[in-house]
Length: 96
Image 1 (cartoon, rainbow, N blue to C red):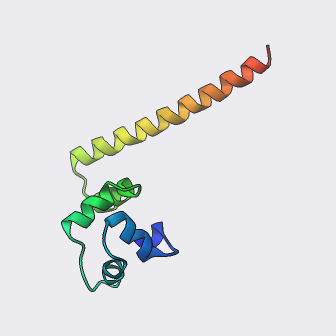
Image 2: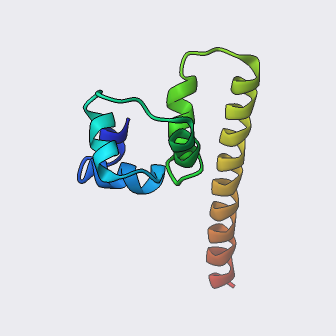
């Protein structure tokens, strides 16, 4: 997942978000170590947190996750809808 999110300077980006050393991040990426709970918590709290959570939960099929993910998607669509409504209102105002 880290290499997909940060194809350039992967270890640096991972280290800064997980609050670990760059060396620890490199070892983690090489598969020589596993992340500690604190590093995972830091990643979940970062800007990449939701993507990480989606990867962790992929295929789980649990009810709470499906409902949560659906709620997030609904919220995102409502934000897009509001943005488009505002753009439409702005264009209509220009026609008056």
